[in-house]
Image (cartoon, rainbow, N blue to C red; front, side, top):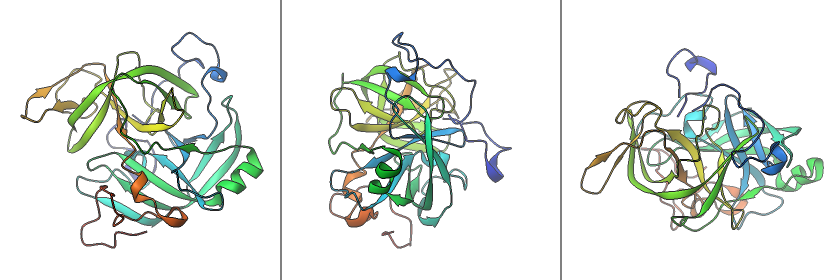
Length: 284
């Protein structure tokens, strides 16, 4: 992962948030962003994201934007830290299917954000899905409620670079460790998905269903073990494995049970396993 170079933490570490611009083509040899389908993705400060819904979201609900926890404008949450219901005026450039910017949507708050067990942020917008579709003709991407399957063909769609990466799910890491953070049941990509800085927060789309199954967040850059930008895998027996040049995403089916009526994050909902803030109200 690359730390986004924004705000008070711009002078510190570098994580999947910045990098050299690639050509506007995906890695299947097709030219231009038209080959990928960027509708519903967004670009933010040195990171990517997407307007998302869960199966029970309603057209009049305030829309949600999903990215990484390490892309939060307030800095990267520490281990065990969970951000809920934090006011935010962050803006996101909304893209159409061809990767053209069609408008800007604005957050009212960070509904949820963490880098513990997963690496995700959810922003509540000032606009509803209905308003976004009416103003820009853009529909949200839907989160799958199911655990993804090994071998599934996937596409990582970066709104920041207007770039896609196509590969498959190679498997799942019991634990993925990077510097001070540990993530659970992470999606490991096959080698074709050579994600770069700026792809953090990109939706990982199952090619067969068109639904989002993960959020892209890191890649082992240098072959180092468990260091910043060099995640390592730890299995159930504590054995550490390093996959140099391999990228990872964090599964998003776990988000679905935590989104209640009105698209409000309810960490006490049945089936919700996302980390809760210590000693704080768990519903935003």
